[in-house]
Length: 412
Image (cartoon, rainbow, N blue to C red; front, side, top):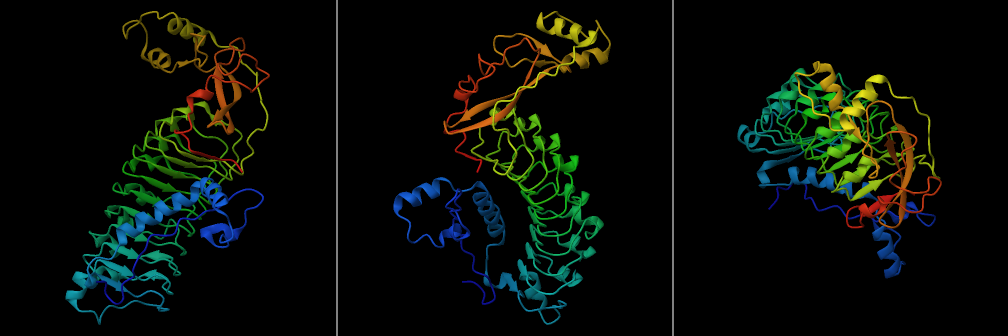
């Protein structure tokens, strides 16, 4: 039984958000769908947008962390128009027993230090207030695992210096005023879910790679222009949401995200994708709508001749000439390690700095054709994707992306 003031959570309804000319806002969550026949409903469900499932996954993580336990473990002070919060009337025993505290939808401008009286608190919701600061004492909440602080006025100067010492697993700062991700957040090594959507972020710090337990990263609705390669060092990342930003390219290093299932990049400035995206073997959902993706085959043949250093390096690598650390300086050894193999299976060449960029359309699931960037070792090297460089009809790579691998590619 839940306490009288406890919130009873239910799983959020799955939203059938349709696309195309017939879609409208009333299609969300099934509203206005009573007149659809079964076939239409099946088609609508098949085209469900990935962002809805990602949102449901994220909400579920929060709900799972905040699911009500014993009735005496929950205190609900939400929607009471509180300007301050004073727990003086709450007994010491009740404070010790409290695991979840809801202060959302009030008028608090700062997280009061009185929340530190709840030493066993595990879940704290302070969303939809006017918070511009979080008290220093929050770092004393050693058992706190979930902090929901959506839709406030927080920025990178609002967090206490010791915020990074918390043992948080879920952190939601969406809908605030952050222009940078606070470095204190990069010290939360137990985080499974981090959301900073709808802020004013311009970049993702390289220190994001410290969050090696992260499974969901939500940074949609910001001003981010680039994805740092350090994001690829998150071994358990399954859901990456970077929609509604200003991103122009995707780093090929993301191929190291072996756990990635869903990648949301819609409403950015992408014109192509790296060829390496084919290596994301667990990727099931890729959202690309609202990007200026090229609509016809484009081939760029600007080519700077290789330097003498590169020619020598190509010769050593392509002819498998043996060498050891005793044969050359360390800087040349490091240079040789940077060799990239030409993707043309008929070419045994390599390249270092000098290469030809080529965009090729690749068929995904027999339904969508996406522009992928290829790097060739020379203008004379034929693309592995087509024997006819003016055609985007057939591709050896097309068969490498079966339908079971990538279930949804959302372009429009």
